[in-house]
Length: 323
Image (cartoon, rainbow, N blue to C red):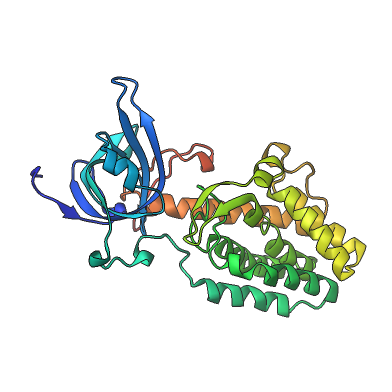
């Protein structure tokens, strides 16, 4: 295409060699120094509702260095290039969005496909149906206590469900699968299984520091030193004692949280020893991997392989298109 042509496109429509312009959200931003010439450059991750892309600004003015920050909507003009098997945007011009641009922030923030309020109510319906009063009371307390943050928190900084409302979406889809599988494996205690699903990742809100756009800037000190599994069982202990929860029930739920990553290298010092904990682990893995699979397919042309994905054991995912 001609070098003078400029396309207004969403990130998932970008193609190598195109010149594009549009509004994007800066999700990460680092000022770096090039090894070759010692000049400063800006290294970005920018996003819109359709996805993220790495971007570089090689010529950095003092004005840009002062004004351009992360979590900011900016207007960008640049060229889509390939770098190490992935697309990247080489920025030519960048400026902050102004009021006159009439930018709708929701168009530039990746969000769960369902409204957070709808997912919250749907998850609460599972709690309402619980018959064991100790499990019901404990789960409701911990779930309701975190409502404000739950409405926007992601489930991860980068990988699966790393989007606004992602934590609720992860729990919601896991619960739907749990409901179906507990009808097949009918020896399960549904109350225990549903509670484990709802509670297993709640401490991620203590592990990560997210803004209301669902963007995680960094891990908290507690998150770095302890992690959400340790934080989760600590919180359960405190709330369980406050509510007078049956000691065995509290222990079963703590075991489910403690073992849901399955392997020590992933944060679980012990493997599942009750059926509900075993199923919780596989529900978690299934939902995380299918989320990443779907994302990879959506971002890959039919008949092509995706880039290698660390979260899927460094595999490339093939988009077979319609069959």
